[in-house]
Image (cartoon, rainbow, N blue to C red):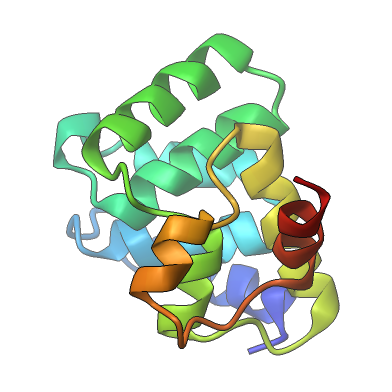
Length: 147
């Protein structure tokens, strides 16, 4: 919603009020922390769940957090697991399906995290033929025209 710092404050409050929160909080809390650039806190939340039990978003945020903290081996392992479990996923398709960020700075922050982690950003031409209504990212369009 364009207010990542407020999201972090609310996540901090939720953890203070319920430090033994259920696993379904993990996605929301880790998303708030990653969007706010608080990668250590995101990892603390994500570490409460096994990698095998993580959904797409949590596993993606795990890879992003490790990458931003310079923990390359752990980021590579998380990205490898992410790619194995979600081979057709790309940030471009995800943003088209769920909507983008409220402001450009938050979108760029997200894309920077994706790129640093090595998670796929853009759809292929073949994928675009299957989903012609996808909202295309300008950075991806630029990459596709350079090929």
